[in-house]
Image (tube, rainbow, N blue to C red; front, top):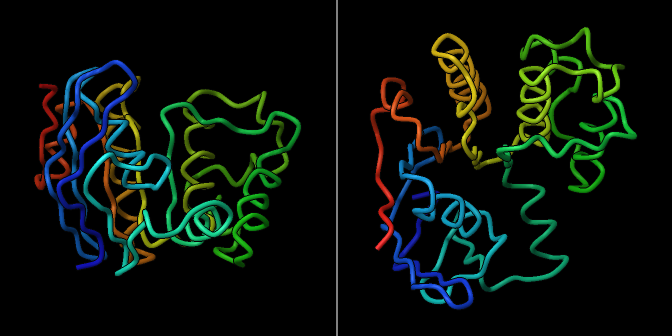
Length: 210
């Protein structure tokens, strides 16, 4: 099994302990994590990415226990193995589209995917040299997806990728994520409150705030 989480628990200061369901996912497979606002979905994603350390339990990615590595070693491991599509793009305004993707290669010390081909696949090849400040919301989201895919990650984590989209564009983005994950043989986890995504990813679990 490529990705496993066991007995994960987390609590923010002064708040109740959140207990998360165990998951196991093979490479090339997709999982949907559903939950209402405030249920802990994004916390769960951050635990799976190693951005948060659990109070209890463990995450294993390709046999590596994330809590056993830390600091720069964890950053490098994440850069090589995990692509994250954040709810907000978090693109660097001083860099153009291509440079934002090249930065992902630089930090991971990994060649990754050809940027021109990736932008072409995502339908934004004409924006390669554009300032990210000139992008529409949909274009910025695609650049964010491209950045997450740039290093050919083994795990793709997407946080609310369809929350502000209509039905047609929701279908396009989910199809895009699934197609790209299958192309590079990555496991895909989408975290969302958007029940429409169940139409595209029938394998799902729910996170419920206690």
